[in-house]
Image 1: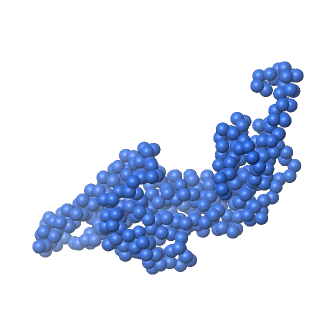
Image 2: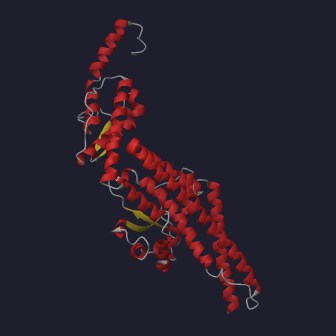
Image 3: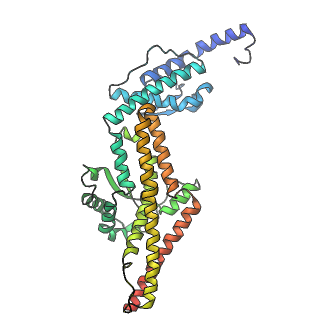
Length: 384
């Protein structure tokens, strides 16, 4: 309306005066939120609502001129409330708010830059964010693969059971033993921070549901799947590192972990017997089956090599370099953006976001599994 009557000077002045007084209570709450991380909203009119210690946007209460800045406004106040816990809630003085889009936006930008730098300082100084990220890499990317091999070896009997018969408590004990006897064993209290769990459905089904945008977090568990098809791990990430390592991002790491575990399990099964050399003493049929098995082994080996050395490790090096170069300047929001891009790129280049590739991988891995069962049965009959 203000713009409609822009050519009428008297009407414009009247409307500006009305807008100034009408926006007063909102601007007071907004200023308090941006600079102190608190607000007093007895009538539930503000664009943000408090639910316990959490804050949420109330989109319908956000003025039109601030709708595109609503998420940034929410983040600023949340960061302010966190900074107060650490005694670092420094304000920018002399920045009053008026109901003007450009002036409010400039204040929001300045305050956002400040709180982002302060949050980044806390994460680096007190919470050691990079150590948390490195731990996630070790666990979910299997760059210390001996712990996963230990787990598959120690927990083989439990993982071979159907899911309804699997003891998660037993898997937790096996995981602690596997980590303790691996190259990750030197990391203090890691056993108390990570635990085994069973996913509700097999990996391929979950990936296809996510790709087709029909993923339901309240999925009914599949009772006829084996433990090896559902095994995953869950890491407890401390606050405020969980602002970067969110539950959503950790669920993406879990998909990569489960894919690598499936490949490692198949690799271990195919590896047994591939070293057999052709011999007249060996049945010709078994020799031919051995050749096919070796080809499958090499194929799975190449996929594992591709994931580790052509996707995950190079992407991690680029990500860690970006943190060093851009983290201090861009602050926490920039780190969150870099991390989101990193894990999404890893998922895509690991072939886990393309339905056709996922289905093709499933067909190949299933064929390898069926072949192993067939070869074992043929070998048993020939021997006996």
